[in-house]
Amino acid sequence: MASGPSQYAVAEALALPDTYFEAFREDMRVKPDLLSAGLTEAGFKVFRPSGTYFITTDIRPLGETDGFAFCRALPERAGVVAIPNAVFYDHREEGAPFVRFAFCKRTSVLEEAVTRLKMLGG
Image (tube, rainbow, N blue to C red; front, side, top):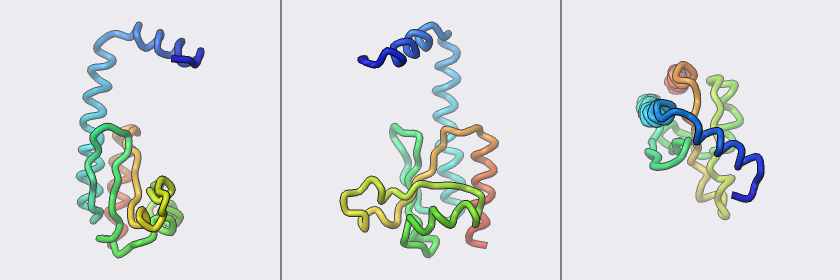
């Protein structure tokens, strides 16, 4: 690791007790399940993550096709933010109907987001 600040961070992390990492691992197992289930219930097509803090969704089942427009309007519509996946594509049109949500949040924040997102269709 080349970065000095990162070396200090790793040294601090290595000094943490195993219980910290066990709790973190369980937290990161439960949160994607919670958000994935809620997004599915809200009408999104959900792509389950394998190794990230983000859940990618397809917004077409909600009658949406433009991830940029959807994400711009989402804070006002539901008080939730998402990231348009098209920003990661060389050919943005291929990623247009996909948006992602971060699940590295407090459980209460995820629960509130799910409640708000379920109201999009109603």
